[in-house]
Length: 258
Image (cartoon, rainbow, N blue to C red):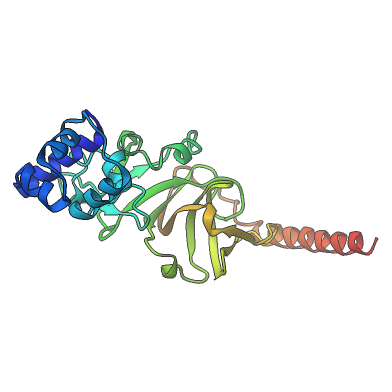
């Protein structure tokens, strides 16, 4: 048996059609179709395309995801059909939000397209977050104050690039930079421009081909409290960072003159 054969059998049973009826629609014999369902034979690409069109399920999903385990009506279908994102709820009807572990955030880059990996993650429910798919990502570094190590950014899945809003913050899942939390600036050609709230960091251009997922800021969860005097020096720190940035620009100009 294979995922494809299991999916074909499952989809046909939902329609309550005979193998003969579907075989006729695909312009093949019933015996040939039966071999695809029992896994004794694999369909060539042209037949696979017909099967995909008939069931209205992408080829990627037919051959890569056990849709018996993840019913289509309970999933969010990503634009490129590379995977289905499960939208699950708790006993109270609240969305279950997967939490990406702090110490294993890089593992998400390998597992984001694996339903079994996503299912293995711990979850929380926040009743005020509804109507969408949410996921919690760990914040790291000092590029987006006041979010420091130990903070989780809960994001809502963004289905279309056109939905990005200037100066709004998003979690970007990228091939080269991993999980990054930045403020969106603009989309131009084959890349987008984002920036940090910490002025010490230069704006970043991300090629669209490197972006795997985008999640819009919905809320944050701090796992550590701030010290009483933590914000008292923020203005001084900000001036210091701006000064370092100016020095960096001057050094860059001098190096170009040399």
